[in-house]
Amino acid sequence: MEVDTRLNAGDRRSAGVTSPIQESVREAGAARTPLRIAGRSHWLSAGRPVAASDRVSVADHSGVVDYVPGDLTITVRAGTTLADIAGVTGEHGQWLPLDPFGSADGTIGATVATGSSGPLAHGFGTIRDLVLGVEIVTGDAKIVRGGGRVVKNVAGFDLVRLVTGAWGTLGVITEVSLRLHALPAHRMTMAMDAPTDTRRLAQRLRSLLDAPIIPFSLELVSEGLAKRIGLPARPTILVEFGGNAAALSAQRDALGTIGAVAEVPTEVWEKMRSTAVSDGLVVRISGLPAGLADRWDRARAISGEDAWAMMHASIGRGTVRCILRGELPASTVDRVSAPHADDTLIFENLPAALWTKLAPTATGDRVSQDIRKAFDPRGILNPGILGPVN
Image (tube, rainbow, N blue to C red; front, top):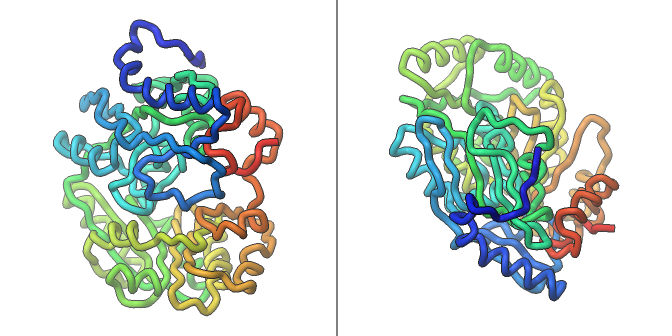
C-alpha cells in the first residue's frame, strides 16, 4: 500500500480541519514536549501511566465527512461520538455494531486507538473488522492515510490494523472510515442459567457454539455482574438475536433445546456496558474458546472473596474479562501474575504501581520498537502507554 504523507489538491477539504492538530504536534515535536492524546477524556486512567506535560484533544474535531448509505460506509472525524454516529446512521436504517465498555459518549477516535469492543464482537467482529480507513497525524506532524472508504479496498501493508489498538503511539487519529450494517427489524435477548460445575459448564458452552443459531452476542456473566444489570444474582448466559420475527422465533426454539430460557429486557446490554468498568484492575484472559470453562475458573480464583468483583466472558471468542476495584491485596496480585501456558493476559486498567510488575511493556520486541520510532521519531505521542521505547 502506498502511504501518502503529502497534502495535495484533493486533500484541501481535510487540511483545514486537521491543521490545528497537526500544528500542535509540530510545535510539541520542535520543543520535544510529550503529548497526551485525548478524546472526551473518559478513559485517561486506562493503559500504562503517560509521562506527558501537555495534551492534544480531538474532542472538537468531530462531524461526518462523508456518508454513502448505499455503500454501507461512513467517514467521520475522530472526535465524533458513538452516539452521534448511531443517530446519523439510524435515520437510514443502518448502524455501527460496536458497544465498547463505558458509554456511547465516547469518541470513535479513542475507540479505534484503544482497540475497544464489546459483546457485539461475537457476531460482527472487533473494531479492527469495522474500520476501513484512517487518517493520522504522525509524531513528526505528517498527515498519513491508510485504507479507504469502500469495503472492497485492498492493500498490501495494512496501516489500518496497525493503527487500531496502538493507543496513539503511531499518530493522532483524526479521521476514520467505517463499515456499517443494516439495522435488524427486531432484537431479542434470552437468558439461561449457567452451570457452576466446570465440566457441565464446558458442555453447555460447546452446545451453544454447535447450535443452529447466529447470535449477535453470546456472553457468560457472573452472579455479581448479573445482579448489577438487573438479573437474578447467579451465573447467567445471555444471548442476543436480531432479524425478522421468523428468524428470531426459530433461533429461540433452537436455544430452548439446550436448556430452559427466558426473555429479558434488551437494556441489560447497555447496563453491562456502563457497569463493567473500573479504575482498579480490569484484565482480559484470552485463549481458545474450547478452554473457556477452565479460564472462567481461573478468573473466579483471581476475584477471590471480593463480593464486588464482576466477570463476563465472550463465549465465541474465548475471552474472560475480570473487573476488580480499589486496593488490591497481595494475594490477588499473586493470583493474577501466576503463569498459565494456555492463556494470554491483557490489562485494561491497573493501579500505577503494578504495571511494571504485571505488564512491563507491550512493545518490547524490535519490530514494534522500530515501527514506533518510524512514526514518532521523537517519542512524543503518549510516551509510556505501551511501555518504554528503547
